[in-house]
Amino acid sequence: MNVKSTVEIETAANILKLLGDKTRLTMMKLLQVNECCVCEFVEIFKISQPAISQHLRKLRDGGLVQETRRGQWIHYSINKESEHYDFVQSLLDYLPGQEKYLEELAAQGLRIICD
Amino acid sequence: MNVKSTVEIETAANILKLLGDKTRLTMMKLLQVNECCVCEFVEIFKISQPAISQHLRKLRDGGLVQETRRGQWIHYSINKESEHYDFVQSLLDYLPGQEKYLEELAAQGLRIICD
DNA sequence: TGCTTATATAAGTATATTGTTATAAGTTAA
DNA sequence: TTAACTTATAACAATATACTTATATAAGCA
Image 1 (cartoon, chains in turn orange, brown, green, blue):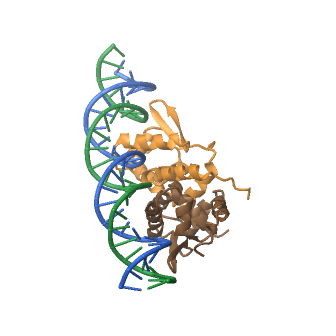
Image 2: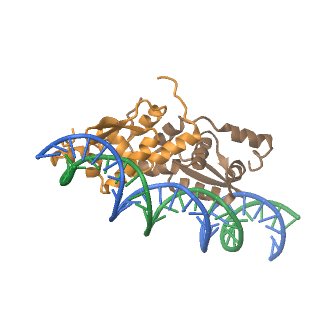
Image 3: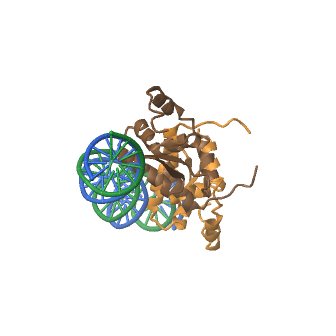
């Protein structure tokens, strides 16, 4: 195992605050293994589209995710270039997979509409 | 390496929210290697004694730390029996040691007053 | 162009969080 | 018992957070 990098306390606290919300944490766990379209998050979570957008903005402002526009859709993915990628991944590795949400979408035929 | 236990998303979000505060995160990092008296935290952080007490209560209610009374002093330590001990430790391992605070106390002769 | 769809931003509100000061409760010792 | 000391709790205020609805922006298409 490589030497573990350290994260300054204040920086770490900010990251943990971002992840200390059920919606954002679930988003991050989904993004750990799948790129997701905003419209998918809107289907998955029981909150409004602006609320989704605001959560994603926080994650993006914190450098944890990045966005890619594909036509009229915007896909979010983990920012692998983040200075704190290892730290975040090690946290996410403790969480159970949240693929159930994607499977539900697939069952409803909603998974592919923005691919 | 042993199989990693998983922490339910909601539980993890609650723990991360607890740790997503600079004061509490620093407390936890200190407790990772030292038992600390409330009075030491009061010296270390630039907030009132009740504010310290309220942070410690949150950590205790979350099961992350435990208290031991020693005469009129109360010492806090990491709760090694916590179901989420590994998860929390793995986070703390990414943070730089905060011994500087204890060294400052020692330099002022305040480290031993409640031992 | 104008219409539809996807996403972001603005503004407002309810609640949560983090601090404060005042006070209570528990321990020690005169 | 009374006084001094340590810590916790209560009450409150300021600020932050996470929603909501309304609206703006951007892309795709008839």
